[in-house]
Image 1 (cartoon, helix red, strand yellow):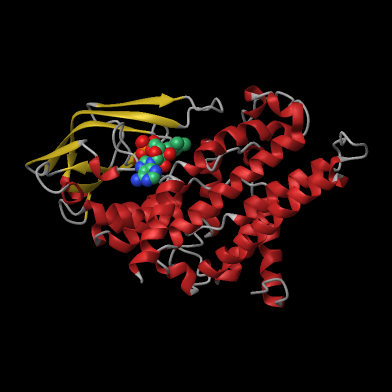
Image 2: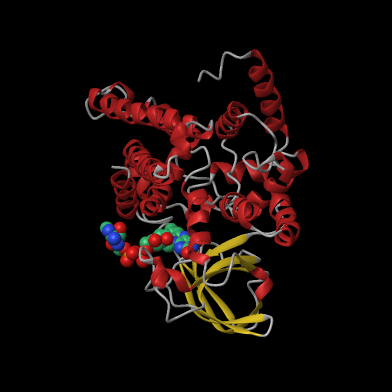
Length: 402
Ligand SMILES: Cc1cc2nc3c(=O)[nH]c(=O)nc-3n(C[C@H](O)[C@H](O)[C@H](O)COP(=O)(O)OP(=O)(O)OC[C@H]3O[C@@H](n4cnc5c(N)ncnc54)[C@H](O)[C@@H]3O)c2cc1C
């Protein structure tokens, strides 16, 4: 699919570019330049979400009847490319890319009316309560329990790695509602209207990169309404797996990888090589960046096929394959960033990374980003299900076809 030669698309590209050049505030642009995770700085990402919503562009992947843009696949890709070229902060994923699409697919009419507008408008932010201290890869072993009591459930137990729970106002979670059943058959999927119910405690965890991105969440007799249940009681495992498909696929990652590679390439022209001249002319560097670029290019074609509704994207193994490729490529890009930034990247400039901090960074944008991005991207092969487990899922899907 060549999306660059179509005049209508080029007109669309100009319209997108004009808006993206003028609509973001200075703080939103700064947040974009300082994003070193899939989670952009919270306040600026939510402010940008609201601006995009007013333009009608907050959820390009949603069906138009629910507030999506109605764009073609090629238009969505052009939008993603122009967006990344400007280093704008990505919108936070849990609401728009996980629970929103899940509710569109499986929510009741009442749940759609109640929750989708707040998600689309960027009024609500949802955190994901799946993992527990003893239930990560083996998620079906989860033990946080919910016991029916009148029109409510009473929840007891804990969750961990709950990203941005301390900034969220809503939560979707998995609970055990039948301890006697086979483990996958006793799980229920719940939507929580608040994260400050009496008995709920949230404790942030400081990550390797110095940011408190993940959290622990504790439940001590927390009473929540049963109306927040998605699907039937004890049928939450199929709902949970449906949401994971949206989490592991569904959005364009390659424009971000290409943008970071561009930063690496620009910096390599300004970095001395140990063999004389600049790093960009060093043969070993050229071999390595060339190999990475070729792999990103082929991933981009895979991604375009899937977003365009091609059979690849409908294949049961696709979300796992997509997750493996995008996470491993982002780690390889992060290694390349550190290699070019060299000694500069050893300093973790936490003060300069704060939006509005007015602290001059030491070195270039790449020097500022390289180390936190490298540290943060260690987790890409862990979250949303580890890559080892994804490889197992791909293998099992392929074997089941024989
Ligand atoms: C940065 C970050 C953000 C996260 N955000 C969230 C969130 O918002 N909400 C949420 O609910 N969870 C979140 N998680 C949790 C994440 O989903 C789990 O960490 C992940 O599923 C792995 O579980 P675990 O950490 O318990 O590791 P384990 O399951 O204990 O795995 C340990 C190691 O054993 C390997 N392993 C385990 N089982 C198998 C197997 N069957 N075959 C081969 N190898 C295996 C794993 O691949 C891994 O290398 C996040 C995690 C991180 C690191």
